[in-house]
Length: 130
Image (cartoon, rainbow, N blue to C red; front, top):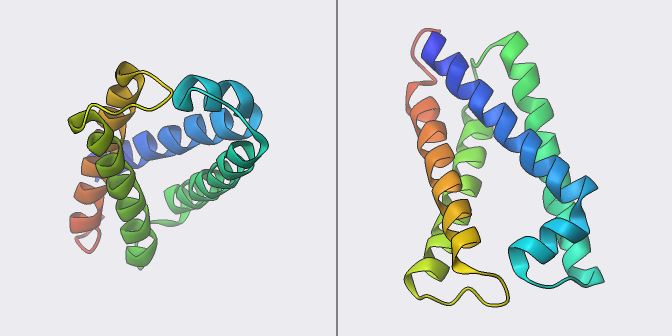
């Protein structure tokens, strides 16, 4: 039970960090992680920030109300994190960072991979007793 709540807290902080970066520091985040900035990238970054902020709020509520019957939400969270991690690893393995540098993409790939593993753990243990 404590491990699941600890992993839930990690996910909460993960989504809060990226939501704040994407919503409040859109220009800097896009330039640092993508290597350039334009209004289309800013708009997409803000949309992803809104989605991450929504996950943050959902996980906060789950912290208080419990994880029972939350399988679809945790499956969605896991899939988003896992697919984003695969996408980052694709850039790392093909050594094609585009306009940014490979170190930033590698760091993000590692972070998303670790958090998707945590989400997978929560996902497979969600139906067990809290």
